[in-house]
Length: 293
Length: 236
Image (cartoon, rainbow over all chains, first blue to last red; front, side):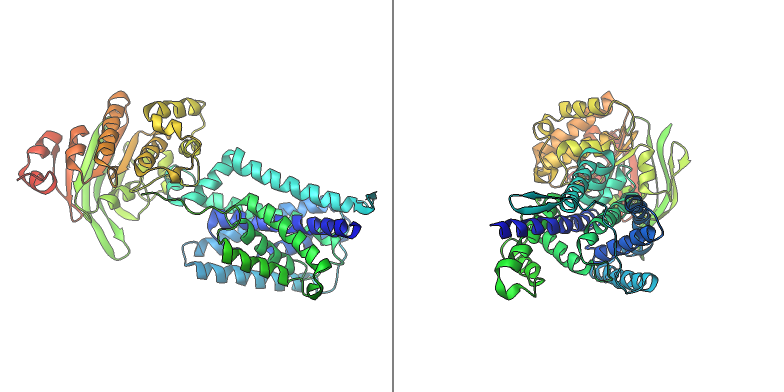
């Protein structure tokens, strides 16, 4: 039982990370219709900036704040410079662009920061409590709280603010949005900027729970996040969160209880993606496009 | 005083020229209809006016040249365009659609205006929390018009409001538009194939054929024009 709870907790810990990356994927997908394969690498680059800042002597919290801000700006620039020119191109062209960004950002990261392992300090102290024989670390609680707050803020932004209304309007009908005076370009820039900032925070709280920061730190996360978004439904922020948690827990339990999967846990997300596409292609919370004539 | 004055408007899609030099105007408080068959350039004309299409010539709003400005900038000059088919945001609720309509406004009367259009179109009020995309074509057209009116426009551009609507719904919609025009000072430019209904509420009209204005006059004149009667009113 203790083992089960421990694994469940590991699963939730990873799950919130997958959820936050999936949330960024969904945010960009909903506003631009683009599947951003570079989301993980964008987060990786921001995490390296966070590391560089702490390495230069800045406190970890301040470093996260600064790198989040930098990510926000870079996200906007990426939209403006790389995405805007292909905005109306075919989905395949855009797909190639985001895969190109994935490769480019990955290489740039290694070129700038090197390919050796780095230790990113945690934003949380090493306190831990023992609850029912399970060790609950402050790190874990912090991770869950930070990412839950991130999701909540994003939800409030989208559902309760004027900026969010504009973002959703552009996502729903870009032409009509322009006809009511909403500058769709500005909205899309905001969407990318927010997604990049989410990635920076997610990376900075996730990486310290892993052995080290390396160039490959976010690659598996992206695969799990894609599984999470597919499971939850690509147009549903709530789905991204629930999907992330399910994928995280499924992964942890599969490692523990399914002997053959011990060393190939990356199979788990692919099985999930396959199953969702087979049985419920819109995902758990995805909406079928309703249209009446 | 003309709200909209278009002169020698030319434009099209890529190498295909659709408009071959149109001139027309809409005076303050007027409903003007542009009649024309499919492919005559009606939609293209409206798109050029609201900045969705690259065109040459001149489009004056209150005497100010707006040709070449972005659609969002023209919209902020209080020009509302209800595009052909559906101009709604299908994933947003009815109420959110109306709030999006007021996006570029910053005054405090937005909530009152939402109630106002709910009063005019009670069906929308019943469905205020429903996704716009799940409503019938007629309801969506009413929503698209209300959404455009939330902009507090001086000029309303309507692209075939009758398209795909049942005859009774179309009639109701046109009656509402006529009432709106009488009770507010909103000028309207309506492009329509349903000449009967459109000429009932319009003061003046133009006939568009293959990108050129071939006839113009008051609604009464157009109704008695033999060519118009034959081509658009189904009378010999």
